[in-house]
Image 1 (spheres, rainbow, N blue to C red):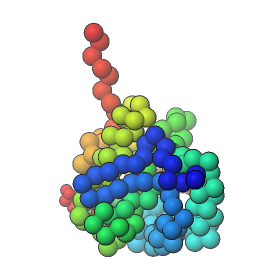
Image 2: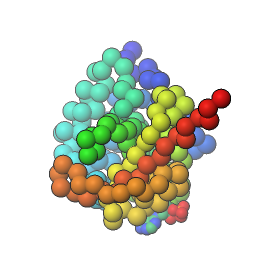
Image 3: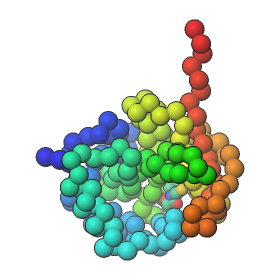
Length: 181
Ligand SMILES: CC(C)(COP(=O)(O)OP(=O)(O)OC[C@H]1O[C@@H](n2cnc3c(N)ncnc32)[C@H](O)[C@@H]1OP(=O)(O)O)[C@@H](O)C(=O)NCCC(=O)NCCS
């Protein structure tokens, strides 16, 4: 059994949410999420459903889930997939960075889910994977996402131009160096 095998980052459980590795039954909900124009407005627009499905199918065939990927977020009360969240490697101005990504279905916005999931992903990245610096790349018009970044203690650093030409604000969280003995 390849999936259901957790990856060092997962599972991540919060009071209301569970972030776990991908299962075959998750595919339709995730395809619907990434096709939604409202959800993807500040993230490059709706994705081609066939491409999303193919990417998820190949993820399901991998020997083990990749910690640097997005993972389904389950609302514990309903068992429903309400989001896709995780860590991605990004090259930003010549530097390799780890981005925290949070994407939620529009009908659950405004309940604190993104903050709850993203802060748990941040903590798992730091404590389980030993990552010392995390970023978020945020469309300047995506005020809700910027607010989530602030609420999980990320600080705005500067802006950057992405390879496609879009401007993104860089928010960053850095683990303070441990005091020398
Ligand atoms: C951004 C997103 C993840 C937020 O999810 P959420 O579960 O609603 O977030 P939370 O409820 O944890 O927090 C949202 C915060 O933004 C605030 N907010 C929401 N819409 C806002 C707006 N238009 N302007 C200003 N603030 C806004 C909320 O009031 C809340 O802050 P508060 O707790 O201080 O009141 C969600 O809107 C989403 O999935 N958007 C589409 C995908 C996306 O853009 N992801 C980010 C990629 S960088």
